[in-house]
Image 1 (cartoon, rainbow, N blue to C red):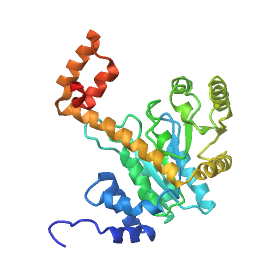
Image 2 (image 1 turned 120 degrees about the vertical axis):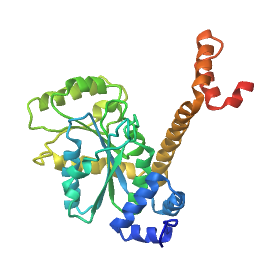
Image 3 (image 1 turned 90 degrees about the vertical axis):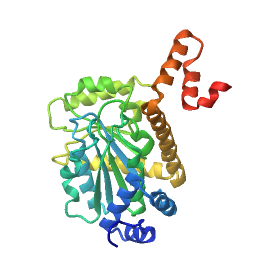
Length: 320
């Protein structure tokens, strides 16, 4: 065809995914990321094939060595015979929305391995560290038949807990010398961790950091004292075997819940995020004036904040 591209050939794309053709995988990821015409048809067609991949999320503060650890973990998984896909979320520019997407460069394990596929993705300003597009891309990679999908998130702070709703297993990574970050993480990252990893274990203070984490978990309610705290050095491979074994153990338990349960959790996340996005779009589209009027009513005590929020989301409620 010349001039303009027609709609995507979904059966052809599905066949390419089944054959794990890299071009088809990239095209499917792009289609689902952008939600261009044909995306919903692809999601519907992929449905029966989804939920087979174990999704493992890696998060943590900047400087913890997440990308290096993920790269090392990929090598371990490949030695064990697993096919691996990675969704590497990089921070976006708040001005242009663009991203350097440097994680793709750092993950050298994928350079010459047809059983490893890396998709870099900009966070698009999402405060939770993810964008809904990440979930859709996970579906494309799951549909391509990869055994394990690794999700590496931005690492911007304790607000970055969306990974808890998306990943089957959550790994929180810290490094020595980040004591202040551990304090800040108490109300954020720590609650989502299935496994805590002190990376850069060859640096001074690694054991102290591990002790600090153990003490912090001991003060938490809800049985967090049982969360394993492992020490790794990604550059040398130290501790990687132990980490891989623990993730496999937890992954087996989570997969036993079944594909439907795990996919429903992600669907609920997508709905909640979409609802939040609609409210944000409404504010940008001129809802500021109405928001100010509702704020005045809240300050005057004539309207409760929750009721004001309900009216803002659904103006018809004002007449009730």
